[in-house]
Length: 416
Image 1 (cartoon, rainbow, N blue to C red):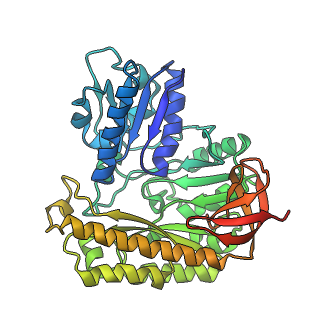
Image 2 (cartoon, rainbow, N blue to C red):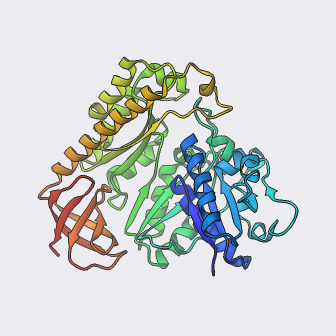
Image 3 (cartoon, helix red, strand yellow):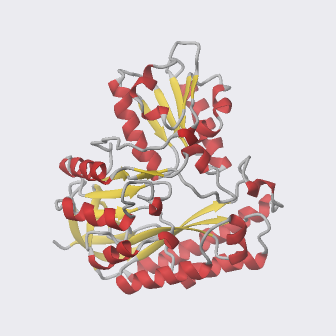
């Protein structure tokens, strides 16, 4: 029986979980449960620990391995859990020999200094279980130190996968049957700064689309709009296979809070980026990460974040109640009452639901090409989910007319 992988957090973790699955198989590891954790919020850490305890109760004889960002930043916490057999760092989890390490041995922790890592290699992932699209890691780590963020301490400094390796893996994934690839990284728009010739993310996008002509769709995951290079903007304007859905690392809609977060953009930068992209691609849709209840946030500052949703035309919101992470500057700032943080998060989520509903309504009556994720469910180029009647093979495409909306998806019927 192959190892079971339980993944928390971001798309990069999802990609790495597939690499871990392959490395564990190479090591001959069977019957183990591997938790690939997230450290972005205290809630993510709590959920992972709860899942580990539940897994031990349900599988008393299984080996339990814990890795990922939470294990990297706080290995002692997981090593102290009696349910855990082995703790691996974010580099060690991608090494075949790690999955024979420590099981049944005295040493239970293998977590090295992530800041010592200088390169990120392609992982040669050829399949993604149960997915119509594949993630493709091109970058890892982050050189910025936002005051709320612990992720650089889990991922290390920014480092990029060489262009040739990215192209090679893109070809392998397309040959494996994936029609859509999603470029992933921790700070994706920092791509290439550490490579010879300093290629940019936009140049990488253009090379993939040119050198992998069989690829039907390419997406880029969360980006820092202030770092979007001119070549990327040209690709957005000219490359129809680059999908018009852009998820932005916004975090707040108030300039003072953005400064206290040590972000590099202003609220005006976000609005202007969205306006510029819409001018290049009128069908573009935007998602955003937003933090509710950051320390010192006043009601007026919170209202600025709510207003940004309309002013920038954001559609898909990922809302995070502020969670103080030990060791970060924001954890030492004056904190808001938890009930205030939760109420503001709820208000942002409600705002996001309204924005999503309005966007879905605007698509009614249009014809959309859908990538089928499972029978009866597909995604538009702008990443809107559509439930449609009729049979279609997952991983293929259908053209559907949008006939209506529901709370979290569109409805449609196949027209060709």
